[in-house]
Amino acid sequence: MGNTVLVVDDSKFMRAVVRNEVQKNGCTVIAEADNSNAAVEAYKQYKPDIVTMDITMTVDGHTIGRSSNGIDAIKQIKAIDPDAKILVVSAMGQKCYVIEAIEAGAQDFVIKPFNEGRFAEAISHFITEE
Image (tube, rainbow, N blue to C red; front, side, top):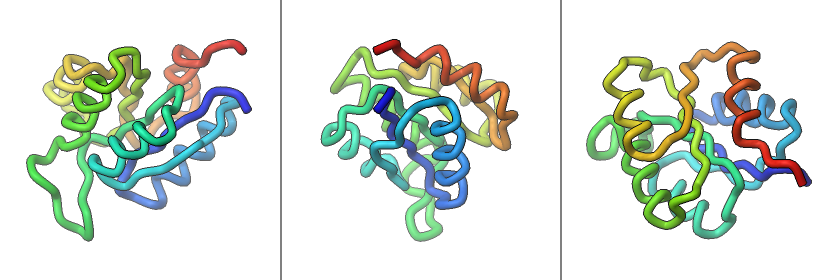
């Protein structure tokens, strides 16, 4: 089955784009989540090898809490599993968000819309040989 991936993004379209890229890179999408709370619950349930995480997510068109709730999900996932492998995939490319995501425990950051080569490079750092 290869490495399993949890794809987290509030946009159904972006989840499909990320799913396609994940599959192109030999991984299997085991679950998807459209908000930070669902991401944490899916992580607990599926224990994926890799998480792709959006930073700014909405529920029914409304931002929940502060705009960077993906960062809160990163912190919660890392509290559950300090070894969790998290790749942030977000349009929030400002330096402060990159720094905050890395400080929260993400290992890499890809800015949307992303270059397929850059995504492949980032995900390859997380792939483990079986």
